Length: 464
Image (cartoon, rainbow, N blue to C red):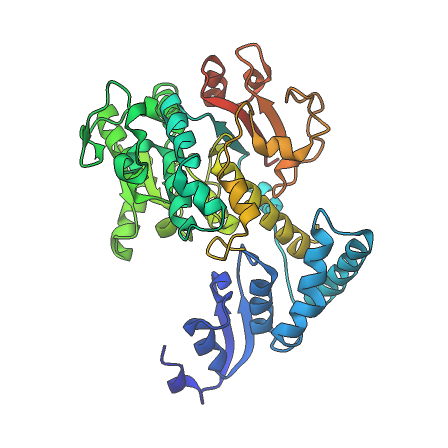
């Protein structure tokens, strides 16, 4: 950036939209903007805390340089006590000190922060029903999953001798979506014994182009959802994934089912993006499905032509998921919205979701007054990631020790007040069949799953 050319120019106001991108004080953008001779700085952000408090400090210090002291002073005075106070194993003294430092921090920052939550949108937008949908692995996925986590490679990793945890994590995440995302013989050596009879393999990948939805629990649920929406409504839907390979599968499925679809990923220029979005949002358009890469379309894209959205896989960063989930429930939306976050039951995806919840509760605590994957994992945290929890309808719900639900998971006390960032406060439905509690859920797509085995449980949030 050519900030040196503007260094001697007096600037009255600097307005930074999507300001959370200034979370890294060492980034070129941050350094360049910091050099400008600006009287007033304003940051706009829907997700000021993405991973940790040090990122929050970067934003606050950019807006008001020096008000919280140096980075090391902030770390010592606020970050360490607050995090220790929020640790489940923290002592009473640590919790007391953490609460005191949190109150002190809020007292400082609330003088120059204006906070507007989703509650404000509820006054102007239709109702939003948001769901976390826990999907069982298919038998094929389950065999492959157990084969991999019991492999010599993972056992070595968990003894501290392996050097590629991120590669192994990536394999499990892709497997949760669909086995077709992997070169099975290469990524999971020795797994050929589990191949179904209807499977043909070429160069480690399946040779035929048909999307075998029954190879994936999540894909089976999605296929039924799309069919029901197409048959019984005039709704449109957005499908989002972190992987372009998953978008490839969606595209093949749409072609096979004769669904009109539009795709937007990172390969597309800004002008073409705008045309595609306008085309999809046209009420008279033929396109039924919008395929979106979460990295390419997370921020700013308005897809109010759809009122349904599926986030097919979770990101380590809760802010990335929140940006993706906000594509349809926004200004201009006229229909009730139905949002679905798919999580593979008992797998690494639940652990990712649980880590998200911790980060989000930190955000709620600091911003609302109410570690990044690339960092080194401890062996204990790796052991948690490379486990499979059999026999659970939701490992996440098990961790809540929920007092509103019976031991079998059925909710007997309705959620009194739902907090968006805290799924333990949402309605909880376990799938026990057609006569079970999930048959009372408002959403027809989820009710139809009571006759199937793929969905194990659902968390539900209702906006207003």
